[in-house]
Length: 454
Figure (tube, rainbow, N blue to C red):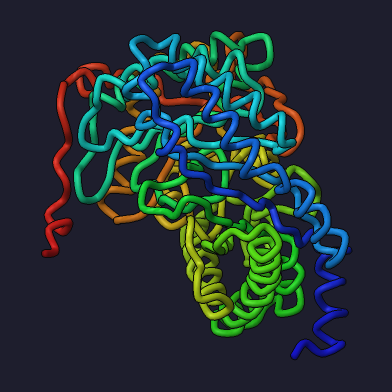
C-alpha cells in the first residue's frame, strides 16, 4: 500500500523537481502491411497506425490528469522500414513515400514523433536497406515527425564500415537539405551500435522484430529529483551517495511503472518495459550535468567526470531494477549537449570537449548525443567519429550512438537553435586531422574475441 508520506513525496517530485514520464511509446508491428506495391503499402501503414494508435494521446492525457504525473510525449515506434519496404521499393524515392505516410499517420493520431524509419545493417546491407539509408536526407527534409536510425554495429557481428562510411555522407546531406533551420534534420537521425528492440526514446526507437504485434514502453526521467536528493547528503561518503541514488531511482521507476500499467490496461496493449533514463531537458533544474556538479565536480569535463558518471549510471540501474521486473531499453544517464543546460554551459566554458564526451560514453547510457559541430566538417570526419563510438559499444557490449549536427554556415563559437525539447547548442570544435584512408577501407571490423560465448 502507498502511504500519505509517499504521496506527498511524489507530489513534491512532480511540482518542484521536474519528475515526469518523458514518453509513452506504442510499438506497432507493420509486418502484416508488407505489399509489393508501394502505394498500397503506404495505405496499409496509415490504416494500421490510425487504428492502433487512435486512443494513445487521449489515454496519455487522461492518465496525466488523473494521477498528476506529467507525460511529456506520446510516441509511436514501428518495425524497421528497411524491412517493411524491401519488396515494394525500387528506388530511394519509394522509401520517401513511406516516410510521408508515416508522417501523415503520426499527425493523424496526434503523436509527437514516430520512430522506425530505420535500417539494421550491423553485418551487411540488403539492397532495400541501402536504398532506405540513401533516402534519409530527403525523407527528413520533407517530414516533421519522422525519426530515423541506423544500427551499424554490434558486439556479435562487428562494425559494418561500409554503412559507417555511407552515414557520414548521409548526415552531411541531411544537414545541407535542412540548412535553413540550423540543419535540424540531423537532430532526428542517429547511428547506433547494439540498438535495443524496446527503446522508447527517440531518435533510436523502433519496434523490434522479436516483439509482439503491439507493446507499450514507457520512458521515465528525473534528473532534478536525483539532484535534490543528493543535495541532502552533500559531503557524505561514496556509500551514502550511492545508496541515495539507488533509493531515488527506485521511487522514480515506480512512478513510471504505474503509468505503464495504466496505459497498458486502458489501451488493451501488453506492457513491455520501463526505461529509467535520466534524460535532461533545457529547463533549469532538469540537468544531468547539475547532478555531476552536485557529486563534486566544478564542471562536467573536469578530471573525475567519467568516474562520477559511471557511479551515477550504475546506481540508477541498481535502483531501477528493484522497482520493476521489466526495466529495459537504455536505462541510465543521457548526456545530450543541446538538451541539458548544464552541459551547454560546460561546453561554452571550455570544460567539455568532444573527446571528453567520448570518454564519458564508455559508462553512460547512449553516446555522443545532440552535439552541434562546424558546418564545414567533412563527411569522412563524421564517419570517423561514428566508427570510434561504434567501437566503444562493440567492445563493451553496450548501446552507443552518434547524433551529431554539422550546422551548415556556422563555426566554433556560434550557436544552433532547434527549439522545444531539442534545445540549443554551441558549435563544438572537431579534430580536423584526416581519417579518410581509414574509413575508406571496405568491409567490416570483426567482432571482439569476447563475443564468442557459446
